[in-house]
Image (cartoon, rainbow, N blue to C red; front, side, top):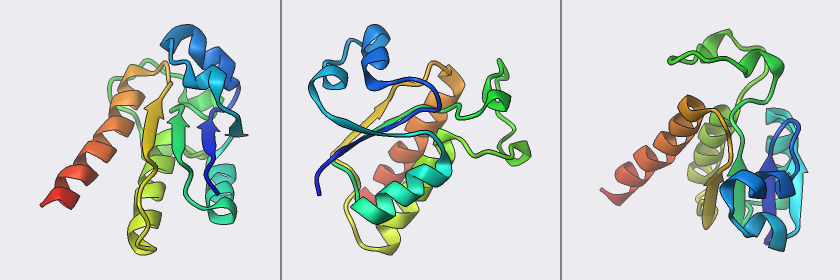
Length: 127
């Protein structure tokens, strides 16, 4: 099943368009998940999506201005955790990552952390 997966605790895809100007948020039908657990369940039940759009902050505790994010202290996992899980899931099951990886988070540190996990994977995989 080819689908578009939108991970965000509060926003809808159309809202991401307002600050990204990426028309995919308007032109595609997105499956919306609100948490790490929903993200995993969706991928396990529906397969790897065509495109994933990541928010980083999935709980009130994540909304911080910290330059270093204390991932180990969070009870609810973040979009970063979802990205790491997706890479591990694809590697363990010999599946390709989604064709499209988007990050619509307004958290610049969290966005960079998500981006870096995919960049690191690509460097490792390309070796």
